[in-house]
Length: 220
Image (tube, rainbow, N blue to C red):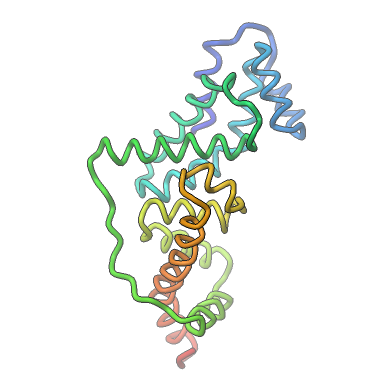
């Protein structure tokens, strides 16, 4: 859906006869290749970047906003903002990092506009031993079930922590890249990662330890 909307938006600016399909056949090229194409006026090339990053951008935004409709709208706005601002991209950071920065800030703006801050439930601290038990329990689950439980649990984290956990563990962004995206110091990011990891395992434990125990007829 996001891609269709963005491609429709881009079509308003088309200035030549390049077809989207021709770029999709070449989508093994680097991000910079398509950026250069767009800046040279071949704007349909941007559709490949949308295709490449729409799922990842939506995931980060959704885990912050915790609302599917609002997340899709903000993700769409993020791509439109990126398209309009592409000439300002200098290549100092990865394109994905630059794009996530836009999406992150757009998400914060959406939260402020709606005047709501999602408060997380009281989450108990967990020990490394308990984290190990939860990790073992996750291995009992099928991949699809495991992914859903982890995704649902991340949604219970505060917005900023949900974004940082997603960027670090799922998008494999470095601490340095996360610093650029969220605007915190490296020490703050590391502290939030440490605390968020413990919170996440605490939430996971509440969900899966009783379930696995029931399935096996014994405690793990």
